[in-house]
Length: 373
Image (tube, rainbow, N blue to C red):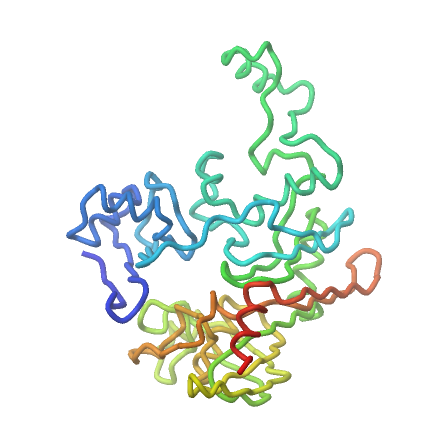
């Protein structure tokens, strides 16, 4: 059986870590196996109702094959519906890069284990990376989906078999799209974090932007709302993939050499913090601004939680290792974190680029209601 790291009575979800015997199973079969008492109908209903994530990504495909390293998260209540292209705004577009205003509820890029999924399966839960090509086509007044170049016989042969009068089939595979429609991710935002995100449009741009991230010359700032009275500070730690309960976290002082070797330094600067009380909830909250020096997975969420200031609405890092779930009566619609500032020097033109994105309506409405007596 799998090892469940959380109790469904104390958390809105249960985490299951798959084992070697689950490799090659469909998601439905693996979920039925680890839950134990679930029927096939119940298992497929969970998946269809958006209650199942695999490695942090919502999965609506019950036939998806899993591996022993996969982590399944079963939620008690359905997650939000997939984001559509109309929900995405382009903040900047040129020949080498694009800056996107990412809405909450969409994964930035496809997980490595899902890279070979068919087009049909990808469309069940598209990533931001996959939603961008049709948007770029609209901006550039190009056909979508595009047709293959003249001379590609395979598309014509397939078209003839389907009675398409010899016309080539449109391209849906992102790797085969024409260069002007391709995007290459250079960093990520969590699924439920909104904000500014940068993509390269050429391999040369991807290499230069990646080097700029390594040198910390691309500045990213976040606005967040968390529990308690926060002070300006810099938080440094070594992050590991498993702190001991299946979640990412900071390296323990008594960690072994193997854990230390796999850890990665994470540095978060809390550059401003404004605290306010909500008397009716008998709780103090803080509106914080965080500046990343490094960009590790879940870095801000982990650092704030470990400092005793969990982000409002965070349903993952809402407890310390082996501790109780932290009560959150804020009513936040999701984790209250938004990447609102991005600045860099253009890797080819040398122009200084600076972008800002206002707090999305879901968070701004909630924050106004929270702060209003």
